[in-house]
Image (cartoon, rainbow, N blue to C red; front, side, top):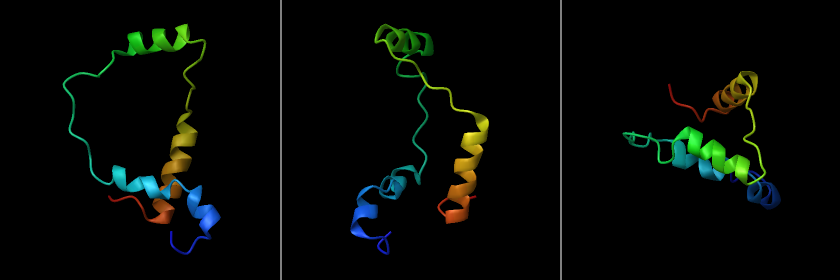
Length: 71
């Protein structure tokens, strides 16, 4: 990260990855039930974007290549 120019560092998501190095404790139930969340999003006039499995795989492969994932 320090090797990046200041402008790239300011726009990099690498600075927030440390938050995800340790698992969060599991909650007994979601803070907001899925149907309630979806309904609230729809009432706002927005949509929940669909994330394809291929995109998730691409991100995981890239993070693995960068060496930020632990196995």
